[in-house]
Image 1 (cartoon, rainbow over the protein chains, first blue to last red):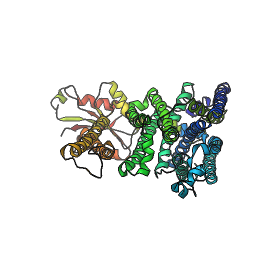
Image 2 (cartoon, chains in turn yellow, orange; image 1 turned 30 degrees about the horizontal axis):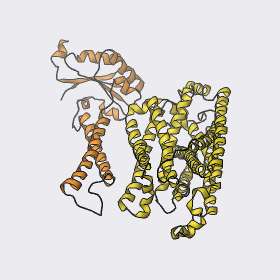
Image 3 (cartoon, each protein chain N blue to C red; image 1 turned 45 degrees about the horizontal axis):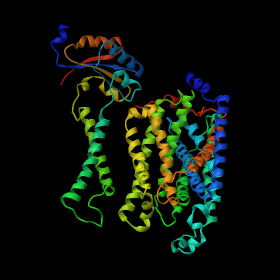
Image 4 (cartoon, rainbow over the protein chains, first blue to last red; image 1 turned 120 degrees about the vertical axis):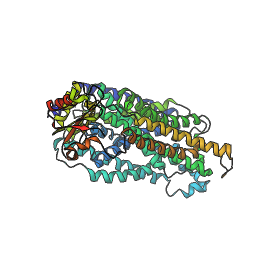
Length: 396
Length: 184
């Protein structure tokens, strides 16, 4: 009981602290969007591609959060209860993604070759795909998928907020089970549409899983950084302790391995079959100055974090865990960049200030939505009957 | 003193039964404070804080598995490179004699295989298993540790071990059914 009371005292942001955070995020959003708008005026095509990467990046974090929260409900996990609210708040990126999709929808012609009538008319492969790859159907799919994800994230959050008042509320396991199935199916559609169709001749059936595994990696890295940030500000210091970070580290480690497994499976099968229509995607992405980026992904998205997180001590060292998480989050962005950008820059990465500006705009918008949910509300699910057990949780 | 010296080498240790985990933890701490370092506990379930109280260091098993895994992966690359590109070069399906891509699955499998062998066999070796008998089986309350009781063993750690003193120390911390265990 004593623990429960101590928890309540430090579990809500002070109004002044909240305002400071909001002002910072709002300033970043205004600056980011103004820069992005200026960039759109200067180079609309560059804006479209930079923005698509930024949109995919923030959406993937929300998607990873949705996956994580549903898995916690389905497994009945106790350890994660004290940090579940933060994960739920990261799901707020999904309703934001619904709005952030608008600029993508208006720039389809700059992004996707299959929207060009003259290109389709001269290409029998694209004609064959026209029943699926056409603008109205693409938009309907995008809107429906983002609506579904936003709805799922909102329902799970509504349940969690209601639980603060009513600890007897049964966990949303049915919603999570149905939600997980629907999410996995729709993630494939989203990854095919938004990323894969940038190179409309190319196809890889595992591409949806590839995007989903990267999303989960990105989310784990992000949530570790958010929790460490709150910890530095004096919040969730005793509530999310080294045992929780240790388990987050295990999750991050496992997902990094899973990402590598999927990414390599996709690459090796295509390498081995060596069919021109399949290898084209990797040829572009391993040629010229893109090769160092591809190698950096193999090294930085798998080997380096794998060995950096393999020992127990490294997962329990918050400084090291934070550094690895920051590195992995950055490399997750690079992973998406490497998938999208070669469709525009064939010969190699052409870093542009719009990459940063659009990322700032999208990330600060998502950040504002995340932040809004923290106002005057507990940072952890105070009504959850398993909370005390989560606080006392210990790795054997 | 004199009673125990005649039996030195013949004694495995002294064991006592405890009724609940709190009592057991307190006894372990008290005994360690009195200088007893070689303690062991038989418990029906994991007790939080017991490993720390017993002063058990983390097992080196993880490192053994890592070394074995890296060895497995390296051996697999070496094998595929040597057989494919050096010893018996043969063009198969127009592929290079040796390439990293198709070698990875074999390297992965061999890494997993050797790491698992190291983990399982290393675990058995570190635990001194398999063995058919253990001195603690002689304790009359030994079967109860599979149900709801704990047995704490003060093991014979060499020349300075005194079974009578150990028995008294166990009694002072609340142990019951104190019994000297004969070595095998």
